[in-house]
Amino acid sequence: MGKAWTFGENMNTDEIIPGRFNITIDPLELAKNVFCEVKPEYSKNIKPGDIIVGGQNFGCGSSREHAPIAIKGSQTKCIIAPSFARIFFRNAINIGLPILECPEAVAGIREGDEVDVDLSSGQIRNLTSGATFQARPLPDFVLKIAEAGGIVNFLKEHDIQELMA
Amino acid sequence: MGTLIEEIFSRKAGRPVQAGEIVLLDVDYIMSHDNTTPLAIKAFREIGKPLHDKNRIVLHLDHAYPAPNVMAAENHRKIIDFVKEQELPHLFMQGVCHQVMLEEGFITPGAIVIGADSHSNTYGVMGAFGAGLGSTEIAVAWVTGKCWFKVPETIRIELRGRTQPGVYAKDVMIHIAGLLGMDGGTYRSVEFGGEYIESLPMHERIIFPNMSTEIGAKCGLIAADQVTIDYLENETPATGPFEIIQPVNPRYERIIELDVSALTPQVACHPDVDNVKPLEQVEGLEVHEVYIGTCTNARYEDLEIVANMLKGKRVNPLVRVIVTPASQRIHKKAMQNGLIEILMDAGCTVTGTGCGACIGRHGGILAPGERALTTMNRNFVGRMGSPLAEIYLASPATAAATALTGRITDPRGFLK
Ligand code: SF4
Image (cartoon, rainbow over all chains, first blue to last red):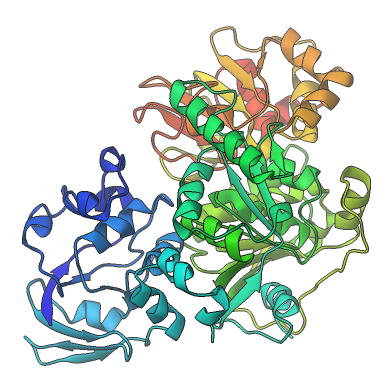
């Protein structure tokens, strides 16, 4: 269970983490400045388990991996958005940041609502309003990557074939 | 049975696959360049496993090459040291990565080639799957030889008719970018076909997959045919037989039909690639630089169009006109056939090959308040240097006409 942090449409990688902070790829360092221009209070107040509710085409812009790394470093549980930019989508999965596509949930969750998300079933419950939403469940292989903490870690222990097994 | 992408993926998967499925596939080649390889090397070290197959790794120095500053030089050093350490067979410093991939025969029909560069979509011109990925995934593919893909839905763009003289594939693709918008192809495979595409030579076809990136597409594909095979056999060291993969009873998410016969020269205007206007609406706008280069439009035939238009004339003396051939091979052929001399006599600055001014690192950076007309594929704010400069995209012919006058100019008045 956690609190929802909402963001607008076409949130680009520069708004997620401005280019000038991309001199490091340390998740905790990056997390200090995540969304620093669009929502400065986020990085100071986020608690583990909180979720991000984004708009359409979340993560558009450059292919830099710093943006999902910064969000992951902030300890958010997942991002829910109607759609993600293609390379952001892949990068998020590969670094083990769970993302759910669910336009209904985005429409039905407001800033500060208490939300509970079951990543494996895709069920999203807004405890503040009582509404529930169903995102497509994350494919097994995405959960495996997320569990390992990203594809690099996954590969340290496993063969890539095990992703699809 | 399926769209071109479903057919290509099915071949590799060894079973029929359909849009929406997730597949883990062997990749034929893994491309990266001086901008993206250092991060991939870092991820590779973290994984801590050996390379899967050196022969599949292709590295290029092109984005900031020759090095314009110490940081670029350090990147090059890191990459060359890695090549030595791992005894990698494919390191190139002879042109824009995508052009060299095609010239060297790495891209064949049905191949799966991933690149740490968003314009890896270019490879779709051979009826191959090409897509851009992040550096971590490149490292993953280095050690596993594989990559996961979600099989995309397909938008088919069916093009009819022939363009009028002075109107090129670039004009058609810019027009399409205007129609679909910057996210019109997101997650999708965009299949280009129809009698217009079939009639085009390779260097014109390339524009479509190359700029499919600009509409957010996962890949942009053109089915291989005799033109593809002739190119492979005559222009590259690739050896056949080449399998021609076609869509079979495809189910498209959307089909867009377009007749190109009445199209006039088009310009993608500052600040977005989908801010497209017929040239006449921006005609006369003053420019400070004309840049003819990049993986989009700096092939031999493009230089030939420009040279034919500039022969015996002088470009506007107050405009910087920069020509950067897409590869050494193109540069050499243009030299042998006298094109470079014509361009120089006309007042153009011909530079060595590479990405050059395209990413605003060197070779033609723009000052605040300046406006450039270029043959590039994207006009992001700040792409060529100052965020206060404006970038307009057009065909090589429009670039040549504009170079002569110093103002955005319709090339049709200059064609012989
Ligand atoms: S020429 Fe431009 S678009 Fe093409 S690979 Fe180089 S930087 Fe990218």
